[in-house]
Image (tube, rainbow, N blue to C red; front, side, top):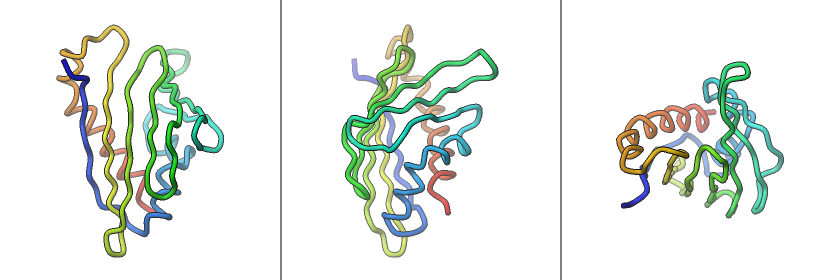
Amino acid sequence: MATPAFEIDLLAPGPPEAVWERLWDLDRHTAAIPLTTVHGGTLRPGASFTARTGVGPVGFDDDMEVVEFDPPRHAVIVKVGRVLHGRIEVDLRPAGPDTRVRWRQTFGAAGVPDALARYAAPAVRAGYLTALRRLTRP
């Protein structure tokens, strides 16, 4: 059975270079994603970063590694933690004065069968769409 997946295609204001900078600013992720703090350094192939989601001592880490990073066009991030797994592939293309952002993602969680996780795809996609809209706006 295939791993659960979803795709988001959105138009973001500004040229690809500006959208790329906003999209991969880890501090913006912390500001845009509720109950989540993102820690990491400069993103480049081989770099890793962690998104900690929780309240107080209760939560989990979403550990990720940058596989490909070709500003301002293409990135591939893999989730390598104990709790969450999956792959994110992002492509940016000029669209007049704006940028077309295409986000493709597979996802799963430890202990959750893919057949069950698949039911969460609409909610997971909706959460990512909200975050991406926040991240890509000026």
